[in-house]
Amino acid sequence: MNVRCTRCGAAADPLRICACGGLPEFAAPSTRIDAAGLKRLLRERRASYEPLFASGVWRLRELLPPIAAEHVISLREGNVPVYASAAGARFCGADRVSYLHLGMNPTGSFKDLGMTVAISAAHALGARAVVCASTGNTASSMAAYAARAGMRAYALVPRGKVSAVKLAQMRDYGATLIEVEGSFDDAFAKLGEIEGAVLVNSINAYRIEGQKCAAFALLDERSWRVPDWVLLPGGNLGNISAFAKGFREARELGLIDRLPRLALVRAQRGVDTCASAIAVADPKSLERAHRELERFGGIELALDDAEIFAAKAAIGREGIGCEPASAASLAGAKALRERGDITRDHDVVCVLTGHVLKDARAYDNAA
Ligand SMILES: *Cc1c(COP(=O)(O)O)cnc(C)c1O
Ligand SMILES: [Zn+2]
Image (cartoon, rainbow, N blue to C red):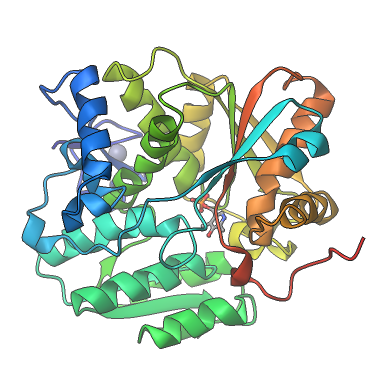
């Protein structure tokens, strides 16, 4: 599959930023299977005991960069629930709200969908080591998949800014932890100092290919009924770029006939927010995410910690729960409902990106 720079359009290396500063991205897949055939194939594979197809990512392998099965490193990621939420609907004053809970992945965040593809691609290349900068979840996921592949993993994290649970995961999976003074952005700037390791941050185009599968999983689970809105918390903005790519490809393949509107919810307090997973000052995918928002009639908004925590409490009180950053999606739905962009009859999907146990300090639910 062909890889191009999203800024200048030149042929690009999937593992590196282009000379112009743009990010590499795989072209849309071409398959001879028609839409009805693809839908049927996905259903059959969901029911299969074949280990490759037990993964919600590799089940879609015709739509992914070609990687031989012997190189696939999978932890059965991508089989996550969609929960209809009465409390979420009440919280934002809409009739239909549901959660796509990507925190229910093997290491507790959506990062696993992208990491299985990035680590498999690195394995196919014969890589011995991988590296990332992280607010915690990328590094936890990288550490697990690298361990399973027999590779070394180097995690650059901002000192004092990562939850104890995420650090415990990295240690448990045997990663080498390098704590950097400052923020996520400072850790990212130090990546060049680790030589000989494949970079698995979301500038790695394989990550986006894996993460786009979340859009297909959501649509499949809803029998291909397109929601009116999909809301996502954003940090480095790889995930919203991946969802957008997935929805666009689903339409090009004839699986759906329209696109949902997308909303990107960021933290107003920037790198000081309690929603540490989205504490990113200078998102690497900003330009590409903005281009996608234009294609989707999208909206970007920034909310403060109080609004995010109120939404987190509503999600927790219904027995679902998520990590603080994830609740930004429901907080965003409430804000857009109040502004009138979301109307009462809209069908709203909030993406929950991380598991409730990821940040055990952060709860405020005594009410
Ligand atoms: C990584 C992460 C995000 C942000 O995703 P980006 O792709 O960086 O925008 C949001 N929530 C959680 C829980 C995360 O781990
Ligand atoms: Zn370029």
